[in-house]
Length: 372
Ligand code: NDP
Ligand code: GDR
Image (cartoon, rainbow, N blue to C red; front, side):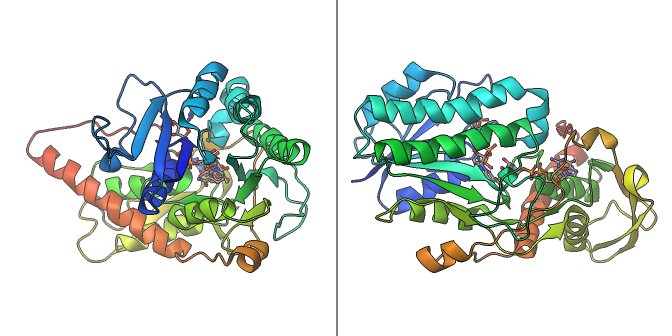
């Protein structure tokens, strides 16, 4: 039975990847952080009682800032494949905690690679690094492929640039099977609530049920190449199944603005919007409401305002990926479009907004976390 170790298993991608590997018959080990609140909700549905001999999903306490912990876990688990998905993954937050972001997102990768080398596992353990389209940053050409020059625009992207090169370096220096997946943005109903797509689908769903009144958002003009996380974790596994390790761009080849994503999400709720103003003044007003998905809304309601608090010190304005190499060499193609994904996300967020609204109706008021 193959064994995999996933850092960041409690995150969006980690949870989908764990599901995929379990389906493929792997024994899956994941690293979770100690937290004062439960932080395993994305993997609770695949939890297996560790007391049973047949358990194939096992969690270990750990942290990418802790070298001895990582070395001990790798030594005990002896994995065939290590997927390094753990990271302080929020670009805007990386401007607030740049040093921590570098420690986790850059040196954390080095710690894992060194542990593999120190334990003499270079020939038996394959390594996947969660690299990112953020490396392209201030884009030098469009679309971006494996040969496009990098120009990172945030402490997050600079840290991930280090991880990209240290992964390449361990491959070239020590013959380790190590590769980077240069993944463009990918989302799902499990996406963290403060990333823009989920902030929009959750915010508008809450507003539609009267749980919030207005969504405050940053740069509506930013353009992203959005795919579905389920499609992208499939690719992470495929990259480790080849004979020769290589780095691949993973993207849909289509880009849309944040504003367009807002329009799609509202449409899923039967709401059409009109935008007025521009830059810091821009607002979105309800033009029409159809059907019964948005009982709390009527024409003329202002449901979105731009708040400069969400502008970044240095922005990545536009990203568009060219995944031709992955299509050719790995036969990978995304199956879910950005608009289909938006529909799935709204539908899931609407379900939970309706649950909250029902509880509220019967006086069981549970506070909804709003800070984005
Ligand atoms: P998430 O933010 O959903 O998950 C990040 C995971 O990393 C969580 O499990 C988190 O734990 C864990 N983590 C954070 N800090 C540490 C630490 N110090 N030690 C150990 N684990 C830690 O990210 P995604 O699932 O969306 O992304 C997965 C990876 O892919 C990340 O590395 C991200 O940077 C990268 N990436 C993501 C893209 C995307 O669009 N989603 C695109 C390109 C790259 P906890 O649950 O406790 O917070
Ligand atoms: P990104 O994703 O920075 O691309 O990083 P995010 O969803 O945070 O932002 C995308 C774009 O939307 C703009 N934006 C806002 N973003 C947030 N979070 N909140 C807002 O209110 C808001 N308003 C506008 C942003 O300015 C940006 O232009 C994600 C992460 O998953 C990284 O870990 C990963 O490496 C990259 O995708 C690829």
